[in-house]
Length: 473
Image (tube, rainbow, N blue to C red; front, side, top):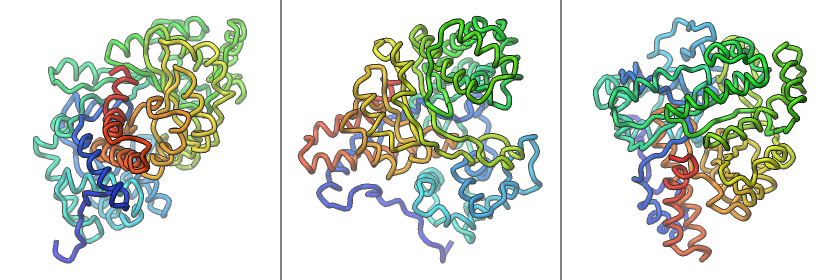
């Protein structure tokens, strides 16, 4: 591969340019670099670990599942068909995976300076041993090296899980999922810990395109009359108990807003009746989602599952893309999100309950210091999830620490979770988070706001102990 630029990962990447702070960051990082990975929230496919079959090729593993990657390519005019992205009807354009990879390589310069380039170059360098940059001229070298490696035992999903030093990973499933893959993992005798999380959005959101069919299936699975309000709530309790029996320690809720409600029984029944009859307005749908969040909190108090709320995203904004390719194709856009008034009905009931835990995320960074950190810095039930999605980048992680430290501290946060479908990027994402936190702590030490032994303990807590504690792992 002579004539190509060298791919090298600098040992001081993401550390401060100031020599004093850089030296401190190095020492802190040395204490956390090799800690086990706790991945309490993500979207990897449990079937990978159940079947332990080889990944097919570089394109299917690193390009097709990763909307961070193909949304950037799409923004520059690259068609999703040309990348081999499946359509909503299950078909694909007749494009060879190798050709899709070449197109990706030709456009890899689009990712310069982005977190995707940090993650991908870490994967290329550390996992596959590549030492030249990805570009048009090295595309075939990359594809052949990666695809060849994937056919060897060392690159099977379980072997990579162990190589990455993953202590536990949580996937995320719908209430309609029978969790057969999780059962297969459990029955296989493999020691890797892969657990599920309860994500009820399809049977909670009346505006979800699958809601009527999902609700019907929900009733069939649980044996409850889910077209009545009491039966609907009983069905959730049944499925939550089943998920917990399969290892779940958390639920997850992706709502357009953070709205919660505390309706009377009569009001809730009347609202649910409108929902199941298909006559709910947009305002009714928002109120229903709000009420169900409060009901989920009540259930969490009973069954102990940690509740996560990921609000504030206009999902599937590109209607034409959604109709052709379906959900989660990179067309999700952050929304301004309000928390103080939105969460009050739920917090009035459960905010002071020692047995309840709610982890909040945001795509609206303006809420960090104004709303989220003060809320988490007061209510014992509230904790802040890490910089999420569009802000899962070195700059976003730094802003998160700067804006939440004063009123939230470190210990009202839950460390890091990678929230990814891209399995091979997990070590890279955790490494970035650990480096940024060590750089941030090094600044506090250099300013004599923390002693270095304190900073070391905080770094270890953020990387390992806090996520284990927050998610009851």
